[in-house]
Image 1: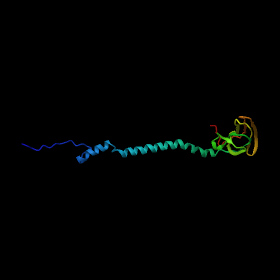
Image 2 (image 1 turned 30 degrees about the horizontal axis):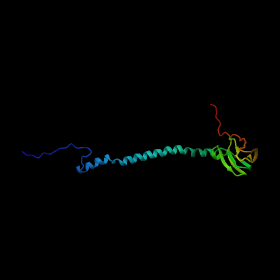
Image 3 (image 1 turned 120 degrees about the horizontal axis):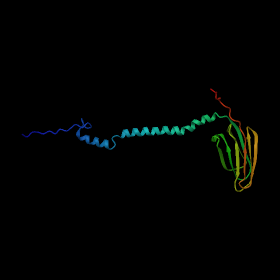
Image 4 (image 1 turned 90 degrees about the horizontal axis):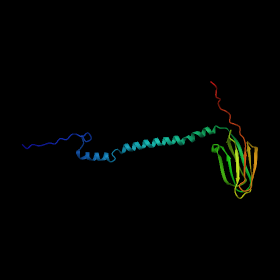
Length: 175
């Protein structure tokens, strides 16, 4: 008896209900980038998280600026007169209480800045190797505070003043 022998294959869950001619392509696609949308979505999530972390790190400086604006200041005038090449360093509010340095300053030079209360306004001058003579002057709220003269090669002079401490906004109450 020559009967027809039918081959039966176990149904593959991935290929059940699909045309056998296309199942090979589907398996190859999954192995070679068929999950591309999943990778793209994961990449977008990673980039979004990285952006939030960077915003948190870099955004802290912007958050501090409004608080700094609440700090009371005093107008301070720095002035340098004389002859020679001078380097000037001075304190100003714009640099969060750190010194600003200007090199090869042309004299006479004058600048009025706002310095936070509680900081010590200071100006320092330094002549270069060519020497000369220069005088620094410091005034707080229009009132002369101090003057000093530098002369000769690499001569230095410093003027400093005192600003009152800022008023306390809230007192600690004992319990």
